[in-house]
Length: 299
Length: 299
Image (cartoon, rainbow over all chains, first blue to last red):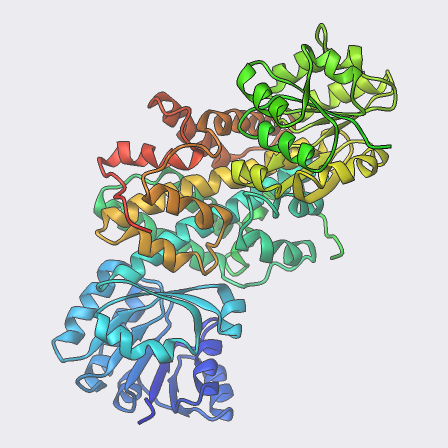
């Protein structure tokens, strides 16, 4: 029998991911705080529910995609939450990026009712969410992963089982260490190049074919040179994720000097009033520090 | 008429690059401080010369690939150097990574004798040098670049003209900002993953398909999990290059908080006695800080 899917949290990432589940032919029921995204998906064939509990009552696999750890805790364990509505042997999949410790706590609470939880944060930005090519890093019971895999294949391309509950969130924290490093490095090198009088876009052409090659340099410079700093992935979410990284590192007794500097730079970006811009726009911190502005450049 | 090539500096990078020029059919004359590499290339068909001056006397295009700015200055401008031997209208190509200011100074000195200088540092490591797939970032007179391009195509795949003298070195400094960021981030995330009890190699599998994707994560983890920390690209060269980055940034009035922390971490690696290991082995600094050792893992 076709699995019935529920999706809660239709933001920049959640909406296109839910849409891809619908396109793949799954019956879909959605819930979201603001209405616009719900209306859009209902027009495309989804059903809607008034509470997370109601979503769970009508779903075999319940997804969430929410901003932060407390949001997920509330939607799963709070009043009218998923725990109240979900049936035994249903699967809960969290696509949010939250603390590994919170993921583990939620998994234990759900398992007590026979509901299997997978922490399944994603990477690849809105581009990957729309194209259905996200990387999905999964923690939780292996048999639940195996059952959920065909569903996950509708939203992602690289779907890796990392280990028990929380392991997916650890992988995502690791992912964000690398992503933040690349975003900040790109900011430093773009503004440095321009400041020395060199064409920064030619520098990107020159370095993206060597050891510096990365998704960030492949995808972001064309947008930046076109004057486009819209998300993508919002700076305040990057900052939030880095908070999870540093919190996890502190829990396990691990100094992270580089990730900690990058956190400070995103903090600076937020203080400059740029919380809703793309994370690649962290270069604005370097613009503020030098008075240099990245020149626009035709593609 | 076939261009005659000279190559000075047959190290980890220079030797395979010179070999690729020989394989491409160019008459090649070489010079190197230590003999072993010279003997190897002579056995394969190269001629040898006792001084940079003698190399230049017999070459239309003279390459250098040397550790640092003073070495290049000495070999080009010093006694028995390239400046003394090269003919007017010959082309000097420097594959070393040196200060943009030094590259400009050398270009001016050579141009006074009608010798055209290209700063042409490379990226892609020993892997790229052997395979002839390096990224080459070039600064200098555009017509000299056009004449040298067919020769450069024997050693590189992505060959980009960035701008006037020094622009290639600026691009390389920018490249090293990104490479250092990726190497350090990889060290932080590998040791963090393992310290939380998660399989670090599965974390790499999980994140390399998303926004964290980079050459570093594609190439280095298999070596590291196999216990191989040999270069590749030596830590003390990475440290030297970061010195150029910070020096250039200071010259142009540009704060680089992230690159500066990475420089400190490579400094720590050198102080731990690991100057000749691969730059990816900067994770050893995190091992030293935590007592955690990266577990070997079958591929």
